[in-house]
Amino acid sequence: MKRLWPSPQTVHWGYFDASLRPVLEVNDGETLHLRSITGFPDDPVPREWLAPEVPAIVSEVKDRLGPHILTGPVAVRGARPGHVLQVDILSIKLGMPYGINVFKPLKGIFPEYPEEIDRHIIPIDLETGMATVLPGVQIPSRPFFGILGVAPPPGWGRINSVEPRKHGGNMDNKELVAGTTVFFPVWADGALFSAGDGHAAQGDGEVNTTAIETSLEAEFRLRVRTDFELSLPIAVTPTHLITMGFDEDLDRASRIALRTMLDLVERYSRATWRDAYRLASCAADLRVTQVVNFAKGIHVMLERGILDQLGCRAPFLQG
Picture 1 (spheres, helix red, strand yellow):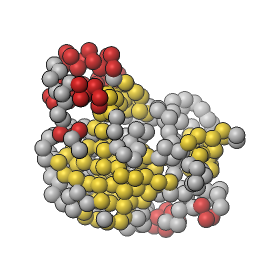
Picture 2: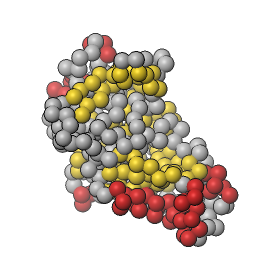
Picture 3: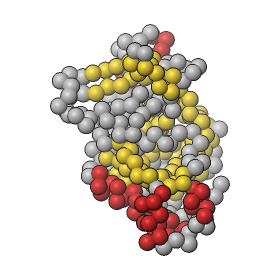
Picture 4: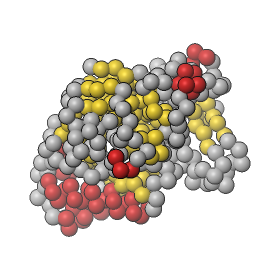
């Protein structure tokens, strides 16, 4: 197992870029113990709550584009363009006893509201996982990384971390919890995996632009797959296959996510595309992932039990 903790030397702030030098290299199939951070030195919380790495990173890392502090990138030996990176999310745990929810003028689903930045500290009980969102209102944590991704195609250059695209990135998909496996198309040598934007909990849509933003600690197993190809990230949970679509227009994002699902069902089962379309209308769930990242997100969820009935033998469902 390799360990990667955030520091001024091991993070990149607000962007993905295939030309980034990896800060760590792991073997195919190796486990990575990674920590991400959220927060600023002036957060109005007890000093012991603040992630210890924050002051140095905020003061020393000046090369910034978007808002997210990402840990990585990590090169996986043997990963090449055209391959698939399999990321098994083995565990995720909360990294600090608070989270932050922020909304700003001209952002979110109501850009006219508020007239000034609204920054709200949300205490989190690390023993129970309960987050006090409002006085007297608690919700359970269900931690996940808003950003999981690989390097984008080299021709894209440096891109903002806010937009999810075919490299993954800011997918903000609340289903990507521990026990889930995410598959990414590889666009650059080594894949160059990064993680960040930790969330203690989030609603579908992430309507004011943020969730309960917090630091997280996780174990990932990184594997290189050469037995199938992808053009967009997909995910497999213990119960569902998930496909995702990203576009500025929700209708187009819906079509991208649904077409990916139908194509996979047709390719790996006895169902025709027409069968898959009918089945999706009767049994699949089409959900709004987020509506605030410029490229909006839709994900489609189909139960694995239904795929079993179709005799589906997709390699990403096998073990």
